[in-house]
Length: 439
Image (cartoon, rainbow, N blue to C red; front, side, top):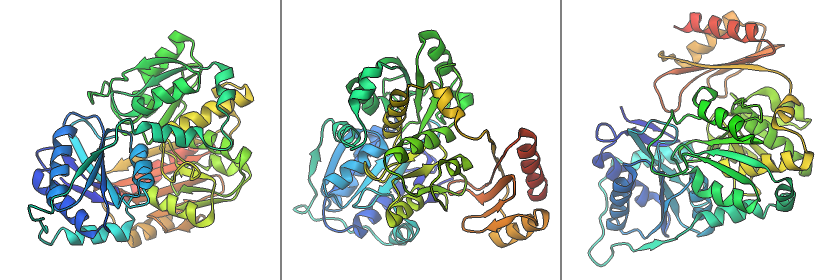
């Protein structure tokens, strides 16, 4: 099944994700962009090289010049698209999906993903015939080598980030890139920051050694390596490195929600201001003493709200930290540098930094059910009639001691159930009640 959303278009290579689909979407994208080159990047999965060639040829035959940056992290592609004043970008990556999947993610000229309205225009444009160029109008190709250096500079040049503090701390870091793009930017970044690095699966060949979703249950190898090497921290990226998960010095994967919470704490130490997160993100950030704004799920929704109100930090609870002073997109390398800065500056361990936040328990589940929002609201409001209901994105119910969010997935034909509470029993009860109502 082909999955189409503001996150792009994705599917299983050779089944739903075919040359016909790729050509249709690339031709449509070329037709709706303003004049200028289009940046192309990809993650490391084996199907990527052939797809990249096909994407490149399609765009050039449609009369568009391209800038090719090779295997690079998604945030690197976002930065290059903005810095080169390209008209847009295409990243060939299925992110956390398994190896048989691939996808096209589309960037605007400012390096941000398409919003809902832009994606509707893109889908409408796929209904039209591709306007192929004549033999004299075929687009050109430019290659930017080592594009990660632009990304590293954007992080190192943050006004509050003092690389010397991290260097002096001589931190030992275990990096698990799971054969994705994370090592391409993180290895040279960590070297510049003076870290001692232990590498796990840092060759970007796309042969994932564990489930590419960087959740605690998939990071047992990283947990063992942190203990074995006596490291200060373990870092894990997803295949396109826009998300970062953490393992503390005790060898415990503390969960992706802490990436945003700890990163945000460090940014607002230097630059206080409103924090923007999505409706499914942990309430931990509400303990930081700053106004918190919540948006629909989706990076572009968070990023646009941040730019609108001048937020210094925000992101999504899946390990996606956003700091607009660097660039307004989720960034695993940026998150790593920010958290290492907090470790070095405070002299605290990662477990102590995580312990500064209220202890909350979160459950994320999904059920194979599709229910319209109005019906969903009626069902849940009747059961949780004491809660404050927010229908910005699905149904979110804020209770005195917990919250519950139920929404249709952007990429799958399922309902997602996310809940958080101050006790494990309470959060389990909330999810179970919602599941029984909806299944």
